[in-house]
Amino acid sequence: EDKVVQSPLSLVVHEGDTVTLNCSYEVTNFRSLLWYKQEKKAPTFLFMLTSSGIEKKSGRLSSILDKKELFSILNITATQTGDSAIYLCAVDAGGTSYGKLTFGQGTILTVHP
Amino acid sequence: GAGVSQSPRYKVAKRGQDVALRCDPISGHVSLFWYQQALGQGPEFLTYFQNEAQLDKSGLPSDRFFAERPEGSVSTLKIQRTQQEDSAVYLCASSLGLGRGHTDTQYFGPGTRLTVL
Image 1 (cartoon, helix red, strand yellow):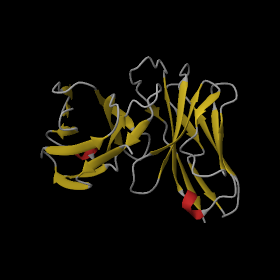
Image 2: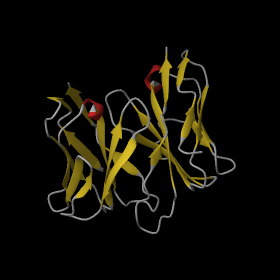
Image 3: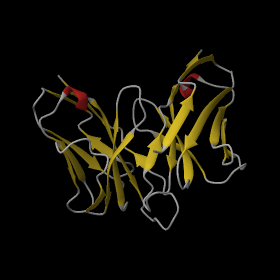
């Protein structure tokens, strides 16, 4: 059975701190890994990773994939209160042509002023 | 529209009632997904449509759950005889549906929070 595990489950930091969120997976026929940010509304897309070792960056957020060790990390530097959210990791296990996603449990990030 | 919309945003039902949840995908998106997100958990796949065809319903938890997308655009998820364990956020997502061996980004709606009393 496909499995995605995120850690930590929750994290409390202060503004300006740097955080690293982890996502490990055990799936057949890996195709891609995606990160989403979920506030009190729609999960919003952050990154899609398909190749090992290539960092994706967007402002203060960055992510990288290790397909040998089967994990990904999401880094957020200089955190702000607006970064407080649930961060979801999902994997397209490639079992279907349409990209059914298997999600992790999510990491709840709280950034205090 | 600009994004995926869902309605209602909140629904409270008494146990045993039927409910219908609506999803308006991004215009032109071929693929539509429904997910169920229980409190403190990640979303779990329920069902998938390619245009009007329901190609995968392997995640529907029971035969009380039914989904349709009759004209290949708007979709409705219906839950009959609701139970307390159906309480969750129901998320809809759509994607271009290009397939061909790569992942299309799924764009999510805000969800419908269903509470069954």
